Image (cartoon, rainbow, N blue to C red; front, side):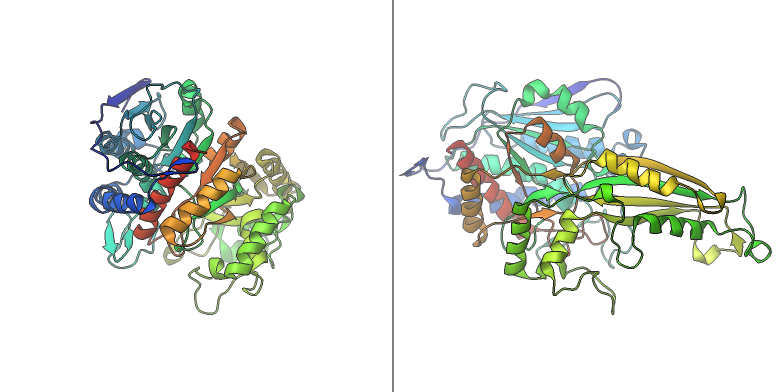
Amino acid sequence: MGGGDHSTTWAPPRPLGAGGRRSCDARGMALDPNAVVSRTRATWDTEIEPALVEYIRVPALSSAFDPDWAQHGHLDAVVDSAAAWAAGRAIAGLSVEVVRLAGRTPVLWFEVPAFDGSAPSPDRAADVDTVLLYGHLDKQPPMHGWREGLGPWSPVLDGDRLYGRGGADDGYAAYASLAAIEAVQAEDGRHARCIGLIECSEESGSPDLPAYVAHLGDRIGSPTLVVCLDSFCGDYERMWTTTSLRGLVGATLEVRVLHEGVHSGSASGVVPDSFRIARRLLDRVEDPDTGRVLVPELWAEIPAARREEIGAVADDLGSALTATYPYVGGAGPTIPASEPAAQLTAKTWEPTLTVIGADGLPPSQTAGNVLRPATTLALSFRLPPTVDAFAAARAVEAVLAADPPHGASVTVHVDSAEGGWDAPPTAPWLTAAMEAASTATFGQPARSLGEGGSIPFMGMLGRRFPDAQFLLTGVLGPESNAHGPNEFLHLPTAQKLTAAVALVLDAHATR
């Protein structure tokens, strides 16, 4: 879609008739968890699951992986489809828009006025008590290695698992958010004003989101609760909430020795190999034996509360959260399974380096005996949540570029630098609501832990709304393999989590 800043608006139908009135309790009206669970399960079975099947079929790659996304139209297709689905929901007062800023990926916006248990409030002002619900519709690249019969754009239902790219990360979020609001209203619950911001650039680091947050700022207001359904779960037995996210620095390292490749027999031993030089440079920033990052600017002190969280989960579940990676026979973790707290600390509050790509290396099948002129490596540094990403990027650049071996041409380009996020202290009402919601829907109390991934939106919102509470949760559990082959959505977890969000929305409104 071309052109300027415009929106498309749908008018949803009025809500279906709700059930009987609720009985009163100490806080006012009690939302029946069993009724919410039944309703959200039915919505998933009959309406959300079919919508996600069609969503998975669309190769809606994020803009970093599809520079011609506007011409291809896949991002527009998935956002328009989600908007049409949203417009058909039985939610009182719902308005739905697709907002498009020139040259930027689209955003799905929805707004629902506060609901008091029987009717919507007429007040839509952005300065009223507000819940912001976030998700994204763009996808990672397909990747190789899908199991026979599976593929990124071929949805397959196998037992409780819906396979295909994007269903769990994060196509379900928009649908689940609206289903949760719908369930609250249908069962005579309460919710504050709710707004939804579903973007299409998250997998590229959310480059378009700041412009939309600024554009919609007056309508966003100051949320008191942010619900983000784009995170992980340690298992499928309870609701998991994420309390911190690591930051990210992406950099490209190029080592160039020659203007063109030369015969390896005649040049090797005299001309240094660009790959060897690149390897030596990486040894400056990472211990090659342990993987420990050697640049001080990439480390941070771990808060006591986060250490306590890690210890509690390790004591409860041991190494269960780190035992599901698909190792080949004989391979194993850097930190032994007998040290689960150290493993969890390493994946949530310590820096790491991963080489995620390379240029200049021909496929082995067609590699000739040539001393290549250059080697280019794509580097991904994960940062502790409180590290300054820009300071970290400058430090990495300085270490890699200083005094190149053999006078090689070394270029370091920082492609992205995103800070992490550490949640503010959880309010007592939200702690109680999460416990009650998880117990009612999963039959187990909730658990909280930091995560090693990055969601740029959370850091942005944390800075913009320092007084907000955050419910950061998701369905990316063991073996779900987001970003990789064989990604799947665990449907029972998604159904239960939707009901849990509905219960938290009600608790927020009656806190």
